[in-house]
Length: 267
Image (tube, rainbow, N blue to C red; front, side, top):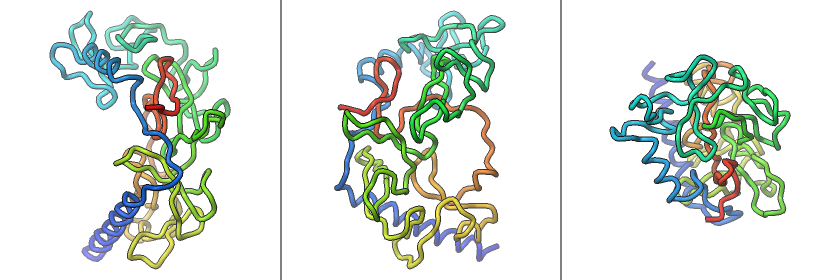
C-alpha cells in the first residue's frame, strides 16, 4: 500500500513537471484567446440578474439562477417552480430565467427542429456532439477533453482531442495553455497517442490500461482531465458514470456569440 502511494506521488510529480514544460513552450500555431461570454458588459448585466439580492446563485458552478417570482435561487433545467410539463431555462437573450414547456423528454433535447439524444455526434462537425444549453435547446459543442480549432475564417469548424496530433504537423500535438488561454501545437517526443513526461525515458500511451496509472490503481488510465485540460490518472471511460449533460460551455479556443453559438474569439 505504501509502495503504491509512493509510486503515485512520484508519477504525479512527473505529470506536474510535464505541465510546467508545456507552459514554458508557448510559441507556435496560436489561436485567439478563449472567452466564456459575448462581452464583458453583457456578462455583468447577466450576473446581476442571475445572482439576485442574496448573491448566492451561480452559473455554471451550481447551475442555479435568481428567480424573481419566488425570490429564491432555483435550479436551472429542472421543473423547480414551473408548471407540470415545463422547466426553468434562460430566455433566448440569456438575460433572465423563464418557465418554458419542454419540447423533448430528457435525455433528448430540441435540436434542428427535432428531438436528439444528448451527446449525439451524427449532426455535428468533427469532434463535436450535441449538448444542452441554458435555454433548454441543443447545440453542437466540443466533446470532453477536445478543443475548438478554426484558425482561419475560411476553415470549417472542428474540435480535436488534446495531446493528439489533430491538425498539427508530424511529431506535434495539441495543448491548451491555461496562462495564455490559447490552443497551440507543440513538439511531441513520442508517437501520436503517447506522451513522454520530463525525467522519464518512457512514452506513455493515453487512454489505455498499459501504463503506470493501471499499475498504481487497477482500471485507471492516463487521460485528459475534462476540467483542467491536463493529464492525470482516472478510471477508464467504461468505468466512469455519466450523470447528466453539461451546460454548453464554449470550448478553449472559442467564444459564445450573441446567438449563443461558440465561435472563434476575436478579442
